[in-house]
Image (cartoon, rainbow, N blue to C red; front, side):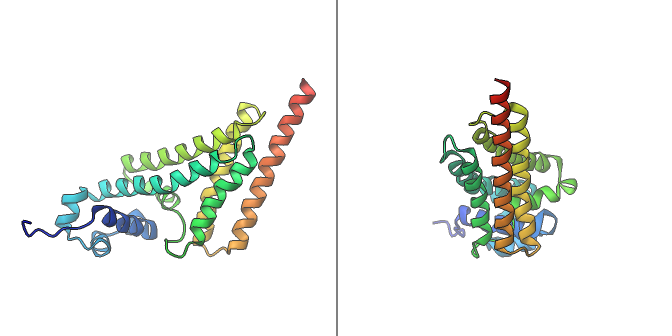
Amino acid sequence: MSGRKQFDVGAALDQAMRVFWQRGYADASLDALGSATGLGRGSLYGTFGTKDALFRQCLDRYASIYGAQYAQALTAHPGDPVRAVEAFLDVTLSRIADPSVPVGCLIAQSAAQSPTLKEENRMQVRGLLDTQRQRVRAALADSSADTRTVDELATFVVAVNQSLAVLSRAGASDAELRSVAQLTCTTVADTLARAASKDVTQG
């Protein structure tokens, strides 16, 4: 070989993702990113581009990992939207309980810092939240609820999902988080039941 240092780009990206996840965009300094990845500034720039470009790649990496898990959870229970929501929230609870990854959620962390992010970064964060909402909505649409109810429930479920990550960073216990998730599922079930009852009455 030419003598240039070889490294695993995927592994470096995962390490950079953890820095953004733990610290947020603003506090993820180039020194911290370099230390985590083992790359100097020149190699960071040469491999990933600017800090903003690296941040967006980390968002994509995070979304590819957990987005796939969310999608699988939401589609694993056709005809049972409440069970699908329960499985969806369980993905988040399992990640929060995993000691091998940082506490919280990279997307929630980034959304909280949206006012300070550059527009392209902010739009990517928003896009990931919209994708999550669309997935939840698709699962909820497998019911007799009207469009407005499905839309409102999808937004509600995604809001709760993000709040679980925020609460975990504030030190909420697993029992507390699971209580929130269970109440969310009960609320979804009750809302869908009312919607179904309304349809029967009107019919």
